[in-house]
Image (cartoon, rainbow over all chains, first blue to last red; front, side, top):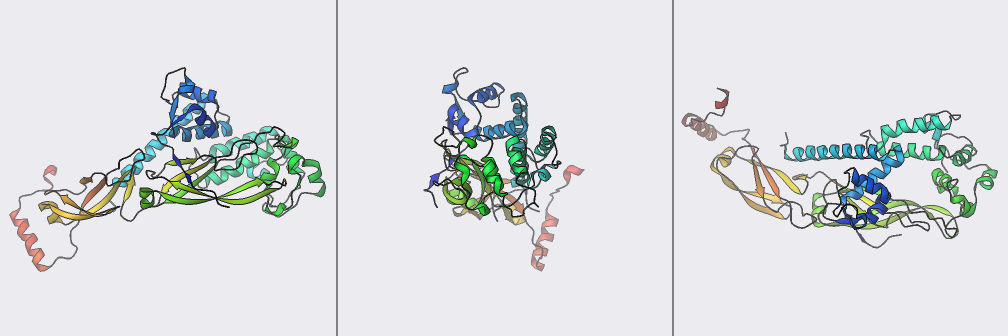
Length: 108
Length: 312
């Protein structure tokens, strides 16, 4: 059985999604997302206190799904979740930098 | 149906209490969780651990599992005749072909809510999300590509039978994707039962290229030049994703120096393109003719250049 062709949405900075879509895609509740915003894990565009009008970079869906898995699989409180996510992000940034440096290295 | 030994997966005794099961799970989850683990096959191992925990932590599912009997892992088996009567109810009453069914699919229909029947009874179950990795070439992400993703899904057919089937989803990867990025195809994961359909997530992994190395949306290539080309400057042909172009090597170039060719990298999703960097490599011929040796000697005598001046 084959389905019609679907255009995939690139989960990057330039695509913005609403709170509701982030919640649906990540499996986090709106309340959990708001708490993670308070911890600085997500930095939506929009005024504080007006969560329904916030817009998140689509990349947040990737982070949100990681958060949702970590919460479910480890029973983490939001503070622990925020800490784990920031460490994971730091590792990813370092891994990206290693790839950049590897790309620039001359082959032996 | 193939037997899975969930106790063995968690490394606990069959008599283990809920606390021991939870402790064993936590330890293994920390070791193999794909978001934090660098262990080989972490994802596969974590799936097995999570599946075992899902069944053993739920008293109803654990009871149903225990009463199936104990077999060797991987052994083909059928639950005892009275098992189906005791544990199956609601929509999950027909299992015509248990051979194809996964043990976990069977058990996950029990205990946690499906017992009262589903669909019309107001139970809303969202479809499962799927995550796959697509191994693509640099050329494919540069122009955008269609890929076929086969998904192994368990679906409930209209006659109430659970079936494992393969569904192929064709996905268009738009121009602008690059290594390590993720894409979402909404609603193309598992079908929801009364709830929304799951999503399909595609991780992009680029296959190594013979000529180009990828860094974000920039491309790097090694550009070998002869010593006299580096010293005197030269115009050389360089491959790009769209064919060869001419690049000027400035006089007095050094090894490792990067020449930037603007806009010849990968397309960016928000528009525009990355750049191509040619990294100069100065290559000396390994075999020299008599004439070449003579010219080098002449150069040696005439030159005052000292490459090790900073040692002195």
